[in-house]
Length: 518
Ligand code: D5M
Ligand code: FE
Ligand code: ZN
Image 1: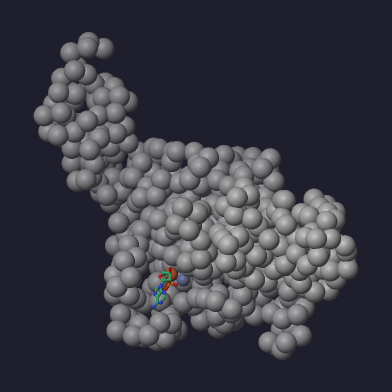
Image 2: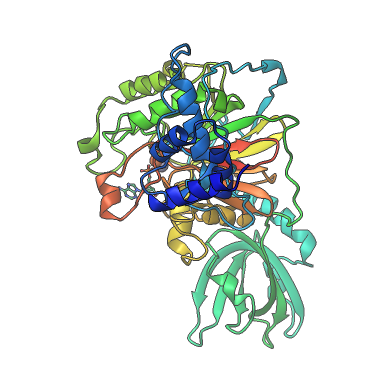
């Protein structure tokens, strides 16, 4: 290729105020009609972009192709400059994240050519219809005992633990270790931290000295999470000085399973149909895109709660309702489901705006709502539930406890801008909603359905209306954004939602691509 071509393209782009990615220049230079393509590319580039990328060139090529009169016009995505790839992910993803993968340009074919025989989908941990709790005191005792048993079993092998009462009877200066639930965390007058652990026999206080390396972990602690402490007893044996502290955690060497073929899942949440702020245009573009060639590998759609806006969820919510009847909201949601390809496998769990009990675990929708939401025969399961798709286990949870993790932990460890980091904390604690008695309501059942017993390959939440993803000890954590524009409440507390994004997971690699439709 004569050098003159690329140089001219770069200088042309520079004169219009853009930098250019090398690959974009190569593709432009190779085009038959560079000038026409260049003009189309400049139309494709989003207003706020500073760099012309290869995918802009691809989109422009597709746009030129699709304007051929002999080809039926596909859902009008190819000319929509707002639809782009993960390079514009609002939240960059955390440590260990693979960079978002660029997608192919859109073409006209709507042939999804799926082979349902190759699919597999299994649900575990669905507690719909299994609820036994009556909310009595004994139920709370039972659920916390189950939590301690199951999370404790992940900790007991790591320390030579004893029950609280046995430690109370030991003499001063001895080494001791305990596995328990955090009962209380408070600072002492001299700046150290006192952590009270509770087990089935009683409680014992542990002191983390302010100059010990573990002190950094104290600000991560939430009441009722399971922990192991080991250390030396004080002379009077009334307290243990902590030498080491363990979380149930995910092993660093965890190796996630992947699918045997190239197949993708779209992970979304917080559709909020029925709200004035529901972004119908963005949803339409998403649904249209699913019918295109570019989305032919997307065979699963996971929806992590808040299908509809609901009624009476927050004070004054009725002022922002487009549809005031809850059943009509679900009917409208079902119409939205009908827009997506009917060969998609859909799995959904409820959220705090949905018409099921608020306390977690939340059972899947009742028969009447299932009848209403019957488009494409979705799998409707409890919040939380695990769905294993072609070998990849996805723990789906709506995410109400994320508000609490974000409120309690320092900004660097959990924030609305990096919701996946708050998810890392839940993985580390191996519990969906450790703290009882705050925002997150808990319905005590015979067993603690919120314990993360098995390490998932993917952890999918929503609720905070922010998009973020990253890997924690090789587990992919994704918080999907929402399909609702900023509400008055969110404006008042400066929540700037990530609306109209669909993170797409490659199930064979666990790479993520973000598609933007707003
Ligand atoms: O929650 C969306 C996000 O906004 C989530 O982080 C809770 C927060 N939110 C929204 N409205 C309120 C009110 N009124 N009080 C407290 N927190 C709120 P969603 O479940 O979609 O409402
Ligand atoms: Fe929501
Ligand atoms: Zn929610």
